[in-house]
Amino acid sequence: MTSYNRYGSNNMNYLWIIMILNFFVFLATMFNNDLIYVFGLSPLTCLKYPWTILTSMFTHGGFWHIVANMLTLYFFGSFLIRLIGSGRMVAIYMIGGLAGNLLFILIGLSGILGGSPFAIAVGASGAVFALGGTLAILAPNIKVIMFPIPIPMPLWVAVIGGFFILSLLPGIAWEGHLGGLIIGLLAGLYLKKR
Image (cartoon, rainbow, N blue to C red; front, side, top):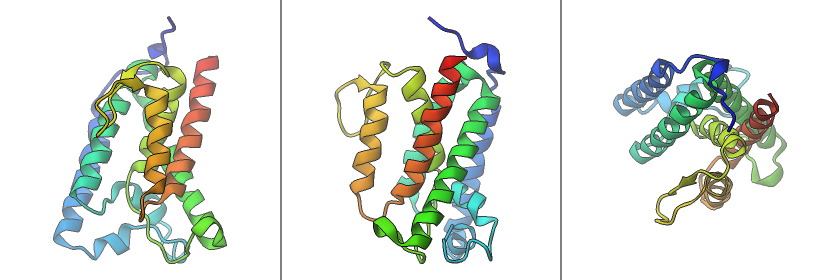
């Protein structure tokens, strides 16, 4: 068995800060729905509003959207902190979210694969998929239950299967999920070699 926690602190405060920031932005958008357009990422306006490549990662479009992302963030993030430390977990979260947003912009501007320059992306899913991708490499056979399927399955099946299932749903920015997942898988391979 390999121990990864020597790479950093097991401090859960960073995870809580990320989650609180997500909830704070969600509450702000509940009181002023126009903030979705101020914080959300659009390929067409990302150069005019460059902060949206970051703020969109902390903005959510509805109650169930934030609940699903924050529950998954908590389980993936807390497990990953115990394996690799909080600093590396935050780095993977942020880089994965940014990579997902960049892929969303590129596909949106090119118009390939159904991308639209007018679409607006919000949510932490790309960043969360980065954490899931890392865990899929570091702890692939840990048994998890993926809602709504009540059968325990290997973590790697849940992460990869969850990506494909979500990608089929309408209104999902699958590009962000894919970008985050790729970063997570690469981070997992890098950390596993060390």
